Image (cartoon, rainbow, N blue to C red):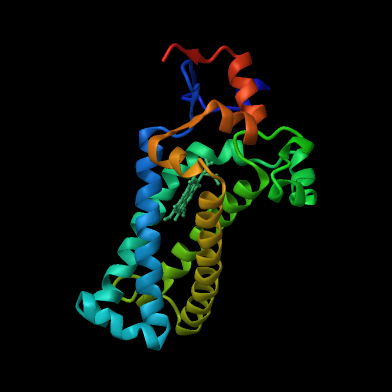
Length: 226
Ligand code: HEM
């Protein structure tokens, strides 16, 4: 059972303060490629979707440049996210205690996490973000390919393309909302941005927010001197 609670690269490092591995360099590179791609995709997508933003396309060479680069950035985003997906999916699987977390969300927001069952490497909110981004990106890449005029759209009936574009726009709006929520949560939970920049969090952070994961590492003696 314990092996399901942490990744093979997670270790606790002795010291003052104690530090705990959270993300490898590879995972962080994948994540930040995803973050930059997301900003570019949202900007270029909205330039094409919403006329008031269209003039912004002149900054990068006009509408034709925007429609050319948008799908390529989408492909980069999906490939990079796949690197995160295959690393993280196991620890984002639903557990019974997740229900309690969402029912008692008030305690989380008021900083009373002590009242809730211990949390593993990811809490329910993080799991929801993970799965909604995973499913959203699959829908976006499939519908995006269906309307990619340079390569695939000529093989797709026009009615299908219309539905694909409608779905693409709706899902894009949802994923932008999820992303804003994700960035805000990272800012709100003091210390978590450090996890995605340096790859490590303090023992105190692990104890406060992801105690089940932290205890599992200690029990398995996954401790290094530094
Ligand atoms: C400027 C943009 C972004 C910022 C500031 C940001 C920030 C963060 C932070 C601080 C964490 C660490 C949370 C923790 O482990 O406690 C994290 C994790 C994560 N981020 Fe981002 N992120 C951004 C964009 C994205 C994008 C665009 C995606 C995917 C499409 C993404 C997917 C993830 C995933 C999958 C995790 C692992 C945690 C989980 O499973 O929910 N992030 N991010």
